[in-house]
Length: 347
Image (cartoon, rainbow, N blue to C red; front, side, top):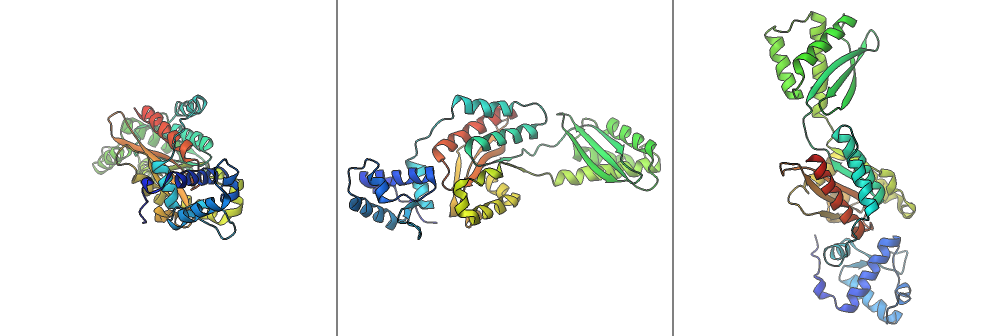
């Protein structure tokens, strides 16, 4: 990866013109030309401005698309701007209230995380991302509701109020009474245990024939717990909200890039791995464009920050993903505030 030139290498004139190009591009998504800069109050002729623009392009900070005489910042230029020139804009009272109200919604913690991420997405005009804390569910009850002679609905209720349903195929010979018997046995035996603990308890009970169950109910208990244990291992670690916000007006001219970005979001495990790399330390991490090979095609940026639980350990990462031209000055503090809000939620 190329090394970002220090700000000190830019004189005042070059720094001012560079900042104006970046600001203009981030606002409009379009390259900024010398005529536009000349009309912006610079006490320089268009020819002098073009000379500086050419110097900035030669230094790798700006690029000139083939279809335009204007310039736009490169990933290297955006990195210089974000690290050394950006003036952060703190979230407004209304924005803070929207984020906090979503985090305070009742229900399972995953729902609060998803709602908060949706609020962040709406306010930032990006897709919102959050790593779900890998907390094991503690069981309150498990029951079975008959759907047909061959299928039933397994209903798991966790201690935090979360309810999850799965359709399972019934073993031969399982009737309504076996469903009730299996549900009562599992709720009484497994309440207060995690899925891992529950699986160990059931295995021990069945192996030692301590479970007072007939053959049909026993088969149902084994199958029901197997379904939940397998599902827990596949539980998604990433919540994505607001993908549709990536399809804004400016994206219409660059649909291939947006298509690549949406493909990136479908590969959740790779995005999750990227967010996981932001867990170290407390600082907000900003991944810009091709700096990360995951976004070599889509030219996207990710802003991410870890949040901690009451014990001080990192339990997750929250952030946004969008085009490289997103409003960093506004979005970075918004991600910071959301991380702080989620830390209070997890406390």
